[in-house]
Length: 246
Figure 1 (tube, one colour):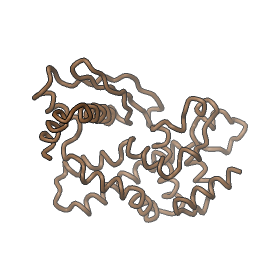
Figure 2 (cartoon, helix red, strand yellow):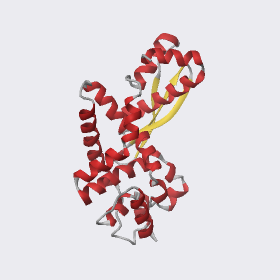
Figure 3 (cartoon, helix red, strand yellow):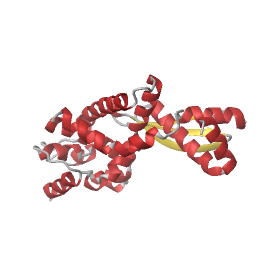
């Protein structure tokens, strides 16, 4: 049964693993292993996630360096941060069907684990790591470029300023105070921590939003604030566009 699920999944995204056990591990959450101690050979995806994160970062950096020959380091860093962020990874993971094929423990299943951005984003990184182990760097790079083509196109048309900068400049001009970022909680093992941060402006709270670093979580919270402001009224939307330079 599980083999059939994995076979169908890899075909749907144009992959063919030599060792399909690597794919199984990439799609297995720690909760499943913890609840099935009678299966000592089963492995969860955290080590592959660590590897995939490195492969992803290197590949995206090279793609940006190659395609944006005239862009400064700061702009390349901004785009890289956007593309490897949890929201972007989770969106891609959902699009290719990762939530449906995740191997979760019963507790995580009941708590909505298939819809948790952190879990499905980590699984995507683990998938990239599994391809690297099974097929090598060239195949892993090809997969990343294929999966991230549309997000890259969108990123290139996104504001050149990061969301924290945008809402900071907006608040300085039009609000009574400045945005504040509050660390609500953190969870997970040391090498894969998830931070939850909320943002507040003029007494209104947005988030919390998650990220693998406090900085990433703050950017996600700032994006949540930006999105809410943008939708509030045409006047506020035009003021934000002015700050961005549109």
